[in-house]
Length: 169
Image (cartoon, rainbow, N blue to C red; front, side, top):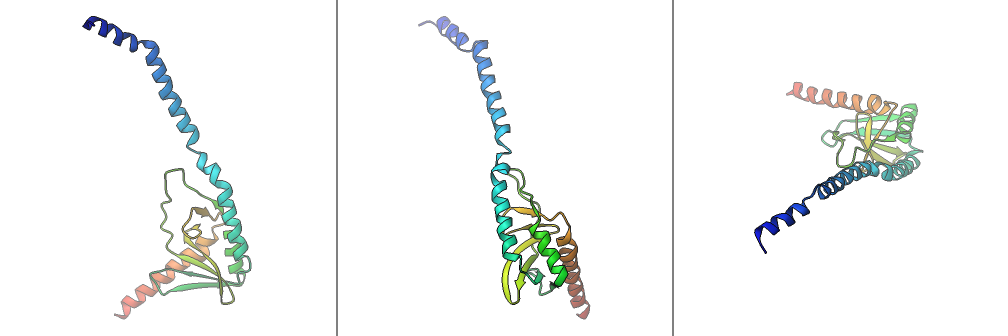
């Protein structure tokens, strides 16, 4: 076989028709990728709703809510109507699952524990008005009650206790 025949064969293989087919294949892959990218949100929406519903059932009878942080001995206890507001805020939250492949930027360090008498019903970890159930996907409290009644007062109490300890030294 001569070199001239080989070059002609290569040129026929690289014809504009094959280029357009290759371009069509790449374009099809990109379109499918964009179509399938948001699927996990729709797939996980019923799962997130079911997890929140189970949590709401477990904490429905809470009569006391305690906010704490693992690196501090300071706690914040809410009872009565304030505890009911927190239970309602958590029960009516919505899933805030980040897009596929991304993670939430919150640290979720403070913990809110729900009690009925001396019995621990359950807990969530919070970051402002967002919370996670046992380290799962984040949920958003649209009422802002978690932030107003737990996160901000707890941060202030921890700061005051630490600054008081420094003044004593």
